[in-house]
Image (cartoon, rainbow, N blue to C red; front, side, top):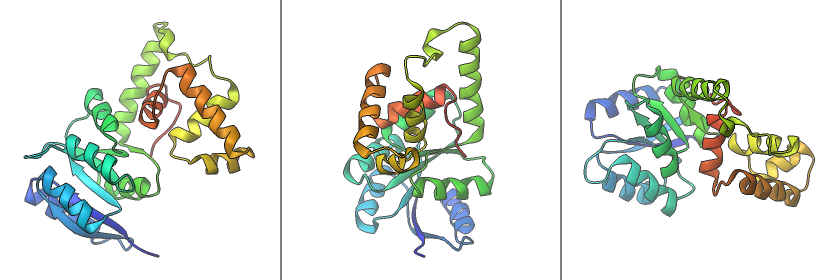
Length: 218
């Protein structure tokens, strides 16, 4: 089995060294490079073609958000896992909008970072549990206050089922196999979901599902 090729992007040498030491103990993960700013990260992504970039958000020359957006546009096959000190909701959604597939706090347990890398490499979004709890708490407060934006009753049961599977990182083909539907039918459901919820891309769909507690991320 081929190893997960990881590029570390952080402007603090000691942080990169610590993460590298951790990852080198994993039999299925290989650190293929290190960078200290956003522009160099882009160059190394093109040269090394990693599977996953562990991306610090605050870096010189080009910050992590800008680098993530550029990677998402130029190298969509490369997964980005954001690594940050910020657990505020606005930071998380900025990272998602930029195209990151995961979000881990710098004070997370080492096992959580390893799990996050494996998760995003497999196409499954990863959100650090503390941020998940913040989002769910916010959702529950809005439900209790009667906020109608927390209601997704406009979706049919089947559309809600498809929404959860899309937000969890499944492809149309995988969803079709899980639900015993044709790929075309899944695409139709997806289109209806986007129209009903006024969503325009997968990132917005994941954001919707997270805000409403429809999916649980590792």
